[in-house]
Image (cartoon, rainbow, N blue to C red; front, top):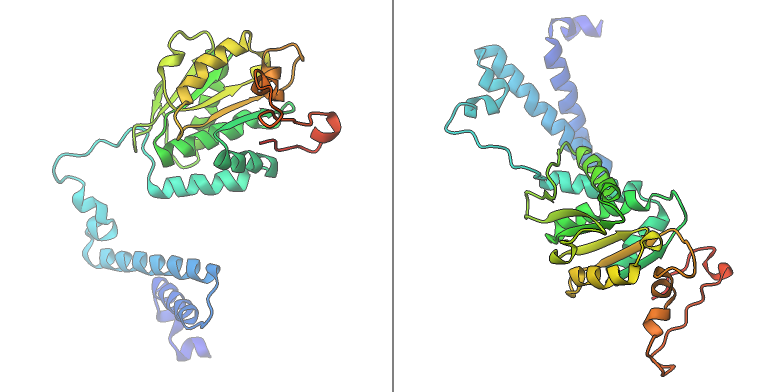
Length: 286
């Protein structure tokens, strides 16, 4: 039989694996038109061949360093302490991939609005993942821009919901975030969590997220203080909330009435259709 003729049973299992990997790798390399999946498989096969080569060396020498190159450096010099709250380039790339793959289309509309506008004021329905989404967006923005990210809620306990979502997001790439504020090891950006009763709120500077603004007492006073934290042109402010009453201080800010105040000329004023029929399917108002 072919097994006897080629001496198949006499070949070590690892050699059979090596032969199969080599044959498949040659087949893929020879393809004139390669897909993304082909390139991924070529990379995988190359790494497996390298791993088997280390196993072969180890079987000959018994030296653990041949099996694991990191062993040789294990006791060399002073060990470096792992950087706190640090993300590798691969981890950041994976976070971005998860961010876009796991966001709903309406959340991606919020993302695109943030690319075009410095101020976002979002009226939303309940339980649609806004805090979850903006927590992830803010972590990525801190990593990519180095800007501080400030989360302002009715209480610090509520602001800590952002913190918990951010910690969970980081754990998806095996990074354990600690501290309050959380300081990103890559660039020093701070993730700052505040309650609206904080006396130090106006002393911070960065991108601002304020949640449930329609439920915050004395919102207009708070807005004047909070907006100063993101007053520079490279910073963004994001306000979002479920609705409460028309008498609430956040209503004129959301509806455009506050913008129109003191603007007598029609050319300077804005008119936003905030009827139910206009807003039912979602509406971007710039």
